[in-house]
Image (cartoon, rainbow, N blue to C red; front, side):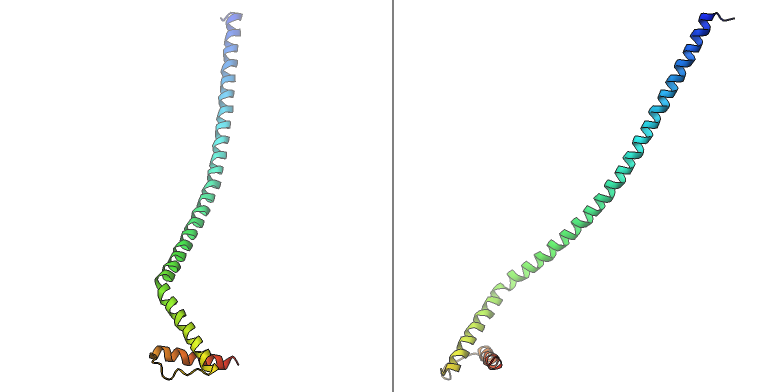
Length: 127
């Protein structure tokens, strides 16, 4: 038979074991709660990352489109500059003709003649 000291020691050990199990169970619940919170946070961050990546891809596409437009403008710059210069010259000549200047003795190319006729036609339409 166990002595009263031994019985007290056994119950103390049992109580200590119960406390340890309760503490471990509490720690396990806290760890599971922290894990669930981390997974929820991860889900939110994954959604944010996906949205940000989509926005980045759209922005990159806009930059590609703008770059194409700029390349076209640079490529056609001289051609457009020459066309503007020819149009300005044709308009000046058309204005002079309307004022009474005679360009019949000047030699002009077919393109200049077409532009001059178009400018004269435009000025007649605007009257």
